[in-house]
Length: 371
Ligand SMILES: NC(=O)c1ccc[n+]([C@@H]2O[C@H](COP(=O)([O-])OP(=O)(O)OC[C@H]3O[C@@H](n4cnc5c(N)ncnc54)[C@H](O)[C@@H]3O)[C@@H](O)[C@H]2O)c1
Image (cartoon, rainbow, N blue to C red; front, side, top):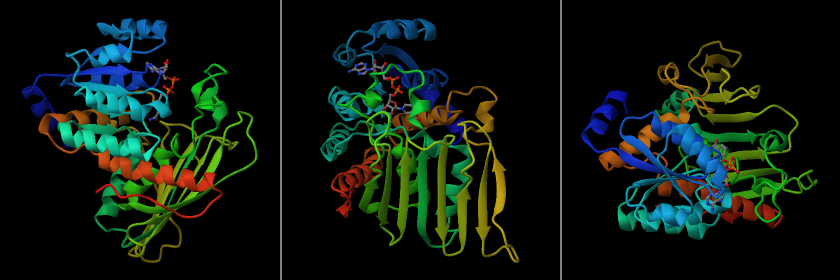
């Protein structure tokens, strides 16, 4: 979608009024919507009232709701951003859809298949829009690659790898010791925590559904008493196979890695990363490149779209801005969001089934279809 199309569409309709629930990562979405024509952030809510007050003041948001229930009763809100801890997303998205609001949810969509099904059902029944915010699909360095693969440039895709490697030390460095991510009752899981960045992005790059999952957890205990590393293998709907590794335990810099292999060419991203907004190197190889004996390096700006970056950038570069823009476009034009409820459920169900496999010590688990 071009910027101009969006601006024309947005100018025609009243602004979509956004309420943001959960004001950690939720602040990135808040700022993204504030940067866009066609949206107005009208309310915030967080159970930490001091945080909510500070954020409302800092970002000039007029309404602060004391509870989520009160926010849902606010008729002036059209769209809720769900940015609470992972295990609450399903419940909070369902509550918003039942209250007649569109939803942009942080990853994961939910942590149970039942919640995924309920979200699909509610969006169908009420004609509401839902988008799961795997903003990595808007990474500038990956969008071209995805288009190239979709156009058949790599031939028939038969294998892909995705990795999310992010040490928990880094994630927890500015958090209290009882933070939900390591709380014994609500620990962040591997495949549904950072995992959707690997699973959903890889599935999108390969252009497949994952139909069966098997996984193992590393059994050595972590300092945080949580499972820190999972490796999953997925059978793909086109007969291919995929491998996903998620680790909060690796002693290495942050890394989001993908590779895709086809009958005519290959794509690999460098593993030497270390930061969300650093430039990166992607490698390509194609059988058409005569005499090539090495993968060809292509240096591209990493997350950020340079056209937007000149004006604004958030913690993850410009990805959340493009994501919010596309979601608004889907609402305004009654189109399908890019990671709509079924598309989100295909990735999250794969993660749920792989976690089930790992919990039972391995073995295949079929992934239900969301057609
Ligand atoms: N897409 C990404 O790159 C990305 C990056 C960071 C976090 N996240 C996701 O965003 C979500 C939030 O993570 P975070 O790092 O911001 O965590 P956080 O703990 O910093 O923030 C969560 C906030 O939710 C509030 N909250 C919890 N339960 C609530 C309730 N019932 N009602 C109102 N407020 C409630 C908490 O008080 C807290 O302020 C998680 O699902 C996380 O996985 C995604």
